[in-house]
Length: 323
Image (cartoon, rainbow, N blue to C red; front, side, top):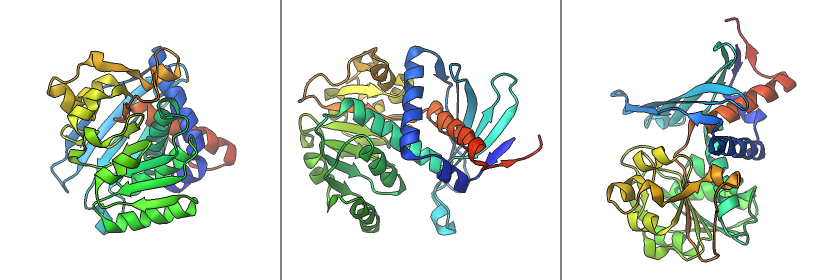
């Protein structure tokens, strides 16, 4: 079995490579050759942690495996990141475990990749102003991935933590972009061509009236029952795209509009994979508000882990252990 450390994973997989791999996996899902299995996500009852397991298989690759991990909210005090996860890959031919890959960095980069793919296919090509609500660790992945698909000139941002805004601002400046930190979410939403929400919020942070026609929204924070970043009316009024419909209405941003009867599964124009594969329309007009509900699916994790394994073989990285 090959073991890939967190350090090696960071060295192996770039943002651009992750975007390409995740884009292929979304298209494979739409074509019916890749499948995500039901998600297990539970409160641990210890250290206020949330633990989950995501599994799936892409028969066209082929790739088979799972990612296990979750959220430990007290980790920062221990000099660890709050999100902790690992991916276990299996040989699809035999079922034998083949690789264990540290997935903290890879989870961040695949989440940024998913959002960027939605931005690539759904935002207006001339979009140049990014708004980010939530400037924690994930915001840097979102920014770098968005820059891989759109030419940005300015970034608006909000976070409840002034320290987070300052830290994120340094990254924005390093990338040569104008930075406009805000004291409220409305100012971010009203100025954005591309709006990314990436918080653990359990209440709506963005109202429908704040979002301009033509905006693309990637809602990336909601991945558990109860989480919410957008007003349900905003969700109901947008052109809706998902990574996976079943997750969107149960644990994603769409769960609230769905439970209120404002949308049904028929309200989804399609998956982002279907747009990539040419199976459904993306943005129809320059005035349309498009919304991608990114709940996070197992195949995103598996393809970036598989990519790390394949790159490690060529660069002599990772550790082989007997099994």
